Length: 118
Image 1: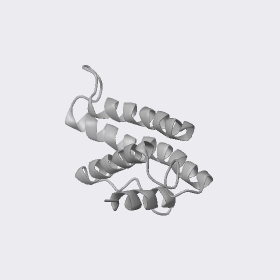
Image 2: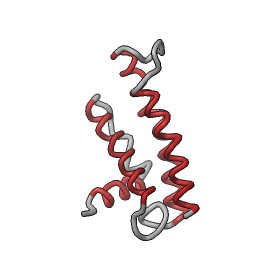
Image 3: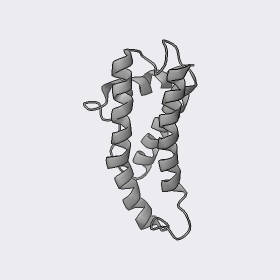
Image 4: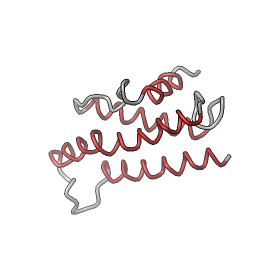
C-alpha cells in the first residue's frame, strides 16, 4: 500500500505541472497558441523526461512488470493514463514521443503491456 501511495504522490506532481500547462492562469505567459506550443516543447523535452527517469528507475529497482505489485493497481492505471496523454499531445503537436525506447525501455514496455490489458 505504501508503494502505491508513493507512486500516486509522484504522479500528483506530474499532473499539477500538466494542469498548469494546459490550463494556464489568467495573465500567464502561456495564454496564446504560440506560447502554448513553446511551453509544450519544454514540457515534452525537459519536464517529462525528468519524471520518466524517476519512473524508469522505480520499475528497474522494483524488478516488476507493474509499479507496485505483480498485478495492476490504481497507480498503474493513473501512470498509464498520464503516459497516454503525453503520447497524444506529442503526436497532435508534431513532437517525437517522450517514451524513447533507448532511454525508457521499462516504461515503454509497461505502457504497451498495460494498454493491451482487457
